[in-house]
Image (cartoon, rainbow, N blue to C red; front, side, top):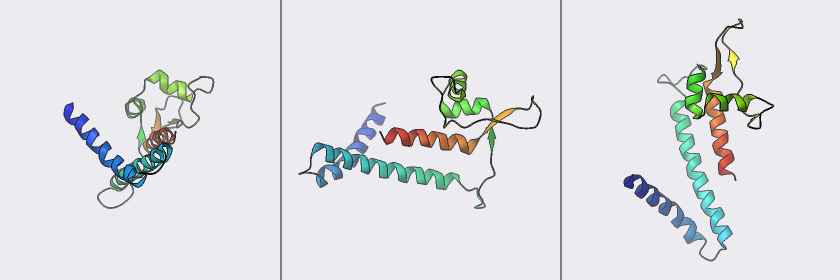
Length: 134
């Protein structure tokens, strides 16, 4: 755990130094904005790297859509089943209109329900982006 804390502290110092140097005569608000800009740019680079690594398979083709079932969706989101369904329920205080809607894998009422994996990934990215913009 100490190694993780030390790595985090080192990374934070490495990120903060350029902002502090460039804003030596600036207000604290300006320093905060510059620090946030630096962090946001680094996060965007990391996200772009993940996207480029995951967008194509070994032949360079974009993978076909992949349906994921409830257990995997719960694992990806890190939420309980009731939380997921509350986010989908318009009458719930936890309702989230951006939460991807499931679909049936067939025409029957008994057909399994699934979500598109990419929709879940985009939803997670939008939650991260919303958090970093506050």
